[in-house]
Image (cartoon, rainbow, N blue to C red; front, side):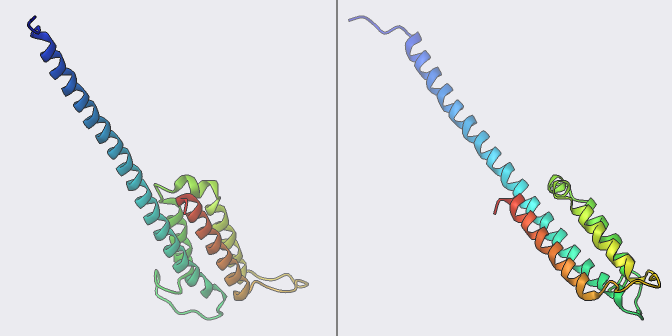
Length: 158
């Protein structure tokens, strides 16, 4: 019987260790990718929730533009101009959903609502009929919020 050369068991042990190491590294890489995707998803979901909540609060305060007499403290409920600025800030300071906001033109839609609010206190032409109303603003605001929810669901693939 011939003796087995020493290099064969050494090579077998080396290849076995190499396969195990490769398996460990591949598993770690896959786990890391999955955790990264989950982290991005969680942050996107959080940003959408913050944006929707903030803009809802702003829309509520913006409705006060249609009241003839308003008493409010700056920065609190009823301060239309602060609500408008808070909405602009909320839209612009998104990190994880910035691409979706740009793609769906959320800022432009917000500007349309602001333009409608600004006409609430504008003087009317002598022959002009009708004026902006709180009912129409509420309808436009509800449509904006519905569209925002659809954008969030699409972006989150829900």
